[in-house]
Image 1: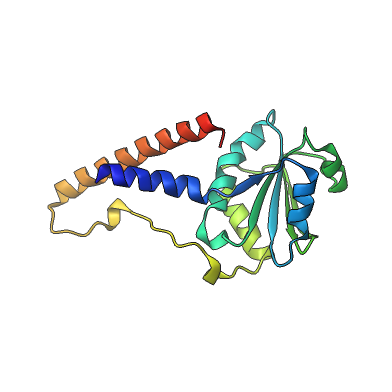
Image 2: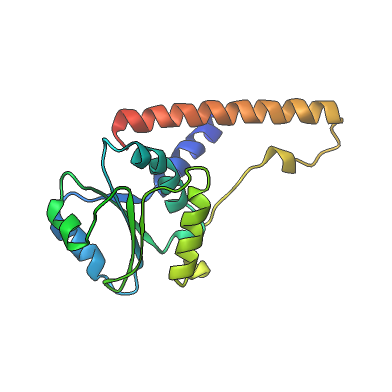
Length: 182
């Protein structure tokens, strides 16, 4: 049973992280030209400390079912200076919110890494009409939702075990993703 849970966690993590790393200007231009497909673009750099702080939260928001219809894109500014010039990128990280090929909003810099995910979610909701019927189904297991006639002492132990398993699985999956370069 635990093995099945582990593979489900791996599939869930790998299957729904949907940030597209741009490898050519043609790929980016093709994505931008798609009609009715909103795009959020992160212009970033490997050497930028703030950029590394927003990488994981950006990926996490990209995998949330509410934003399944939005294309999330990552562009390394060191590899695409022409794209940076075209979009007037003068600082990193910069986030462009595009729809039907037109820029709706632009965020430059990182104000607060602790509130970044909430800010990103709010900006996406403000700029794009989100069709929730297109969202991906998600299953969330929360130990606190466990309902049984178990004594309170056992429920606390159960919660601690589930939290430990979750932490270990998250660390393991992060290591695998890092190893594969995801």
